[in-house]
Image (cartoon, rainbow, N blue to C red; front, side, top):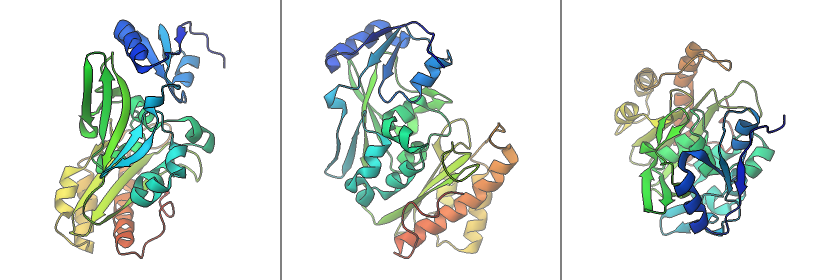
Amino acid sequence: MPITTEFEYIKPKDMDEALHVFSLYREKAKALAGGTDLVVQLKENIAKPEIVVDIKNLEELRGLTLDGNKLKIGALVTFADLIESDLVKTRYPLLWEASLTVASTGVRNRATVAGNICSAVPSADSAPVLAVYDAVVLVRAIRGERAVSIHNWFAGPKKTALAADEIVTGLELPLPEKKHAGCYMKLCRYEGEDLAQGGIAVLAFADNTYRVATCALGPKPARCPKTERLLNGNKLSAPVLGKARKLILSEISPIADIRSSKEYRLHMAEIMLERALEIALARLSGKGPCYGENNIV
């Protein structure tokens, strides 16, 4: 399908020029990084920008480093970059696991983590993992820089806290100080490439505390504070699991669409939560499946 929308195209030489363009055009400008979402939107006439700003050559948006206890992910870092990183695999294995489930190899080679959260689709695979890691989104405009908690980032389906004149420059993920392990459980229609019908990320800590977040089970990805409070301080017994399964239903609001019914998503959310908790705890004890295994439903 050809792109029929007319727009100007600019490839800024540096960040200052890019920010200047966004300050002038604001919501009429679109950033082009991986392009896996934007190109589709242009072809389908969903996005109709006056100008497309190609930021792929801005070197300061690259980089995947551990600075102290924070993983810094540049805005141009792709999911393939995360998968190929020994640093991510060993220090942030939950992020590595979720990255394996994103779309196809071809898409992962192009799609950026920053782009995934800027698209803000409810099914974004990276979102629940970023939520349980308490990630921070770094943004910049001519008027200055700011850091936005991932918990305040998603404003609704395809809506974020990003202002019209701002560019995402990267993300920071603080490494939890306590011993922990996790699991990202993804519900698909079939084995292989698919958008999530539902997703649940869990981080389990050695002191019996937990972080739980979901995607594709409500209008935006989010943590589940009620479920976390129930789990915290308790060993994962059958009665506790039973209560958690029921409680998470009060924290999600899935829809029915072409990929799944609302009722099926509600039913599977209970199952995914239980499996994710059990796998995370098993991994914490060194007995669970390797990351990237047994996490697709």
